[in-house]
Amino acid sequence: MDAEGRATQGAVTEERHYERMAQAIDYRSRKPSCGRCGAASERFIVMKKHPRYIPAFHFRWLTLWYDPMMRRLYPEEALKNALIAQAGIQSGQNLLDMGCGTGTLTLLIKQTQPNATVYGLDVDPQVLDIARRKAEQAGETIVLQQGTATCLPYLDGSFDRLFACLMLHHLTREDKQRALGEAFRVLKPGGELHVADFGKPHDLTMWLISLAVRWAEEVHDNILGLLPVFIAEAGFCPVEETSSYRTVSGTIALYRACKPMGVVYETCVSIE
Ligand SMILES: C[S@@+](CC[C@H](N)C(=O)[O-])C[C@H]1O[C@@H](n2cnc3c(N)ncnc32)[C@H](O)[C@@H]1O
Image (cartoon, rainbow, N blue to C red; front, side):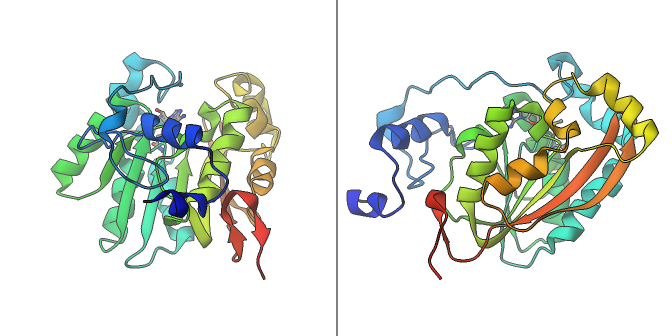
């Protein structure tokens, strides 16, 4: 892409452009690639270290147990199927599972709509290895990439649907807001964000559990009911809670949010 083309893609400085390039790794080729122009570049062979992150189930030594524990302790299948159902995925769409972890949802999405192109992104190479093995075993083609949700390595307006399942509570408030801003940027106008994460408790039992878990990881803002607020602040409209699940660690809520038509990338200026 030439300089003019890049300039038309919004007010992104050269420095930011190169920062994105340095942070993004094509998980298959291991070459740095750019979130703006998608190009791999020999110029950025030295990768920046990824920022610190909270792994799935918090402790690295629990990563191998993530899938069996999710199956046994949480209504995983019901929750992930409901998330997919509410997204109304169509043939030919581009879909991103942000913070895909071990790829359970990513694979379910692909199996639900084999004619969609499905991407899974996670910051943790260990979970991506598990996801890759699962995809090979299932014989499914999904694109798995290492990268951070706070600086997505994709072009503006690339995706029809973006999923964030149980990943936003791993991010600080500032990073939640950044990641939601990135989700907004990479979605097409009219595209949709589908989130499952800890939410405001709806009954006494869930509220009592929330007293214990609210200081875990970065759950606190979720329990205060701030996730839909952050989603709306990122530019999505409307934002709705579609359902909620009672679990051993409290309420998990599902949200659907739309990127309005006629929005120009980060500036969110209506062109109607
Ligand atoms: C609880 S797991 C959820 C995994 C999967 N979405 C699921 O529903 O099973 C949270 C995931 O978020 C990932 N994660 C944490 N911080 C991240 C970041 N900044 N960017 C991308 N992924 C991140 C973790 O590595 C982990 O795999």
